[in-house]
Image (cartoon, rainbow, N blue to C red):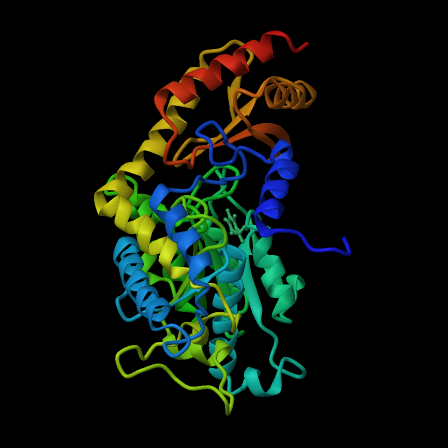
Length: 418
Ligand SMILES: *Cc1c(COP(=O)(O)O)cnc(C)c1O
C-alpha cells in the first residue's frame, strides 16, 4: 500500500499497463469457455454511464431513473421468456444470486403452507424441507441451499437421462415416495455440459401434483424461449413457480447481471424486503422498490445495461443472436465430427458442444495445446465419467469464419498430439 497518492490519470494509465498482459480475451469472438458471453456495444456503453452516474438502485427515492428502467426491463424480459405478466422480478448479480433469491421465496411458501413463519422463526425446529433435483443440477443450487440453511444434504437426487435432462419418471417416483413433505423441485434449462433442457411441462405437472414449488435454473438455457425455433426446448416454462436466468452470459451484458422471477410476488417480497425508520419509499409513479426483490440494499443501477442490450437487439435481434449461436455450435459439431479421432459427446440441442479426442489423456493434451496455440479458447470438463473439451458459443460477434478458424486450429493441434 503506497503512502503517497497519485494523479488519477496516472493511476488509470498504470492500472491498464499493469493488468493488460494478464487479461483474458473473453469479449472476443473465439472465446468459447464457461458460457461466458461477450458484451454488446450498447450494454457496455450503458454500463460505463452507470458507473459515472453512480446511482443508488435501492428504490424510487434514491434513483427514480434506476427504478423506472428496472421496471421496464422486468416487463420486457417477462415478454421475452413468456412468463406471466403478474410475476415479480429482481435484478440480481447472476444466476447464483437468482437461485438463492428464488429458493428463499420457495422456502417461505412451502413452510407458510404448513403454518411455519420462517422469516420470523428461522429453521430451528421447522418442518424439514425436501428438495428434489437432478444429479446434474448446477453447483450453485447446492450453495444456495447451504446459504438458506436448508442444507445441500436436503437434496433427494434424481437421475438424469442420456443427454443430461432430468428423468421425469424417476422424478415422479421420488416425489410420490413422500407426497406430503414441504417440497421444492429444482429443474434446469441448459445443462452446463450438454445444454440439455429438462422437460419442464411434464416435470411441472408431476411436481405440482404433490404441491411442490418448482424452480427453474435457466442461467443460459432460458434464452431458448426468445427464439421461435428453439422455444420448444423450454415448453411449459410458464408452469413453474420461479425462474433464474443470467444477463451476463447469453444476453451479452457486462458483469454482474442476472434476473429472478416469481409467480408468487408475495412470497418473493416476504423473503427479501425489509423496512427501517429512515427509509422513504419511492414516488407514486414508481411504486416498485428494486431492493424488495434482491439481497442487496445499496446496489448498482444494473437495469440500464440490460435495457440497452434489449434495445440494441430488439426482439428480432435477440432471436437472431440465440439462433446464430446454436447454428454455430452445430457447425462446430459437423466439422469436428468429420475429423479422424474426434467424437462429439453430446446431442447438440443448444449452444454447447462436448468433444473428445480418444483417451482422456489425449483430450486433456489437446485442450492444453489449443489453449497455448491462442487462436481460440475452450475449457475441459468431465461428463458421464469421460473427459471432454467443452465448447460454448454464446458471443454475439462470433461468425462462421471464427468457427472454421477454430476448427482448423484444433485439427492442427490434434495432429501434433500423440
Ligand atoms: C453459470 C450458471 C449458474 C451460475 O451463474 P452465475 O451467473 O455464475 O452466478 C447457475 N446455473 C447454471 C445452469 C449456469 O450455467
